[in-house]
Image (cartoon, rainbow, N blue to C red; front, top):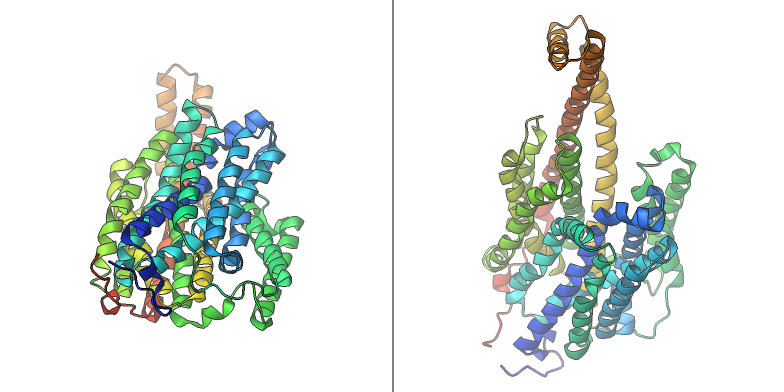
Length: 528
């Protein structure tokens, strides 16, 4: 195929098929690194604590600093790409991420590690949003579903594989290697981007004034909000004066930011695109996807390890089939979306996800891997229905520079949905565990025949083991209390998983606000 050269020709016509796939490989590698580094570090934190002499609160900034920097830069990626040029900004972000990874691995103090994790987070923002807009612009519309599915392989599997990979590296090597493995991949992605990518033809206003006020308000608002979400549950929320002050700063900063960006002539973040009905609805649904994706990965490992006493490695293998199902379905949905309306597939994804989570609302003390296998696999498959069609239905409604602006906000919604979801679900779980324990304890008395029979059974068991009557009674009471605690936890997990189900059910009507964006009606690619 000879690329079209007319000034009004779509950007994808200026690339040969081979170059498109090379660029897709580069941005996909970058996306995998960015998302993997969000989760891979968590399992190595205990080891880092010992090596760096840090407390739990101190070492948590290794994760928090990365996420805060990422969240602040995400909505600015459209503006940064426009100002510096897509090619230089994307390659520069990859290079920053790679160099920061090197110095994270070389860090011998907590302060140094946190600083370079923040730089990693700043570089990582473009590896999702700018990469996504680039991918949509350089491929013909008829191929959007396929390449979105391929790109989504890394985005959806990385959160599942991250903890397993991080644990394996930490156990078999040492924690710096979770950063060193980024170096060859990051170097390759940077080189390919510099050699083959070009600036967007929609780049404009390169020399217009920098919106310093908007950037400062955004940094204050999102920085404080993310810190509240990360630290709130540990600090007992509004019982802490720090959380109260940070919340006040977050609310006032974000309110001022919205007003400023909607009234200034040259905004750093184009909030006006939220007037696009399809984009606004898709962004809200994307927040729910963040809750379901990250909330599920947060809750299930806690249940398996704290209640069912599985090891971290066993938990990782239980989670693995879900990530595998997502990966297997991505290419299939990528092809299907060219034949079926994207919003119809997104509706199926939301509905199936809610149904797949229902078995998690009926947990018992006997629930094991075999009971969770198919629900977790179906949940994983439904994420493919969500990622590909939702991305197309939301972002295909934008054109030109709006696409670069929109991808940042779209991915920010998923990140904030995940952070807010985990914070809320953790608090909800903790509160319900205490409430259920109180209710169960009230019913377990010497006047309850069932409880009394169980207590006597436990006491007889310990006497048979050689304990004296008094010791056996104490052991029986302790065992009874432990049983009550486990049962209270199970009931609390059931209610917490139900929250996720209800959130997804509430998203179903929003699907109808998405435009059809039927890829069949878009321009078909020329013979290549």
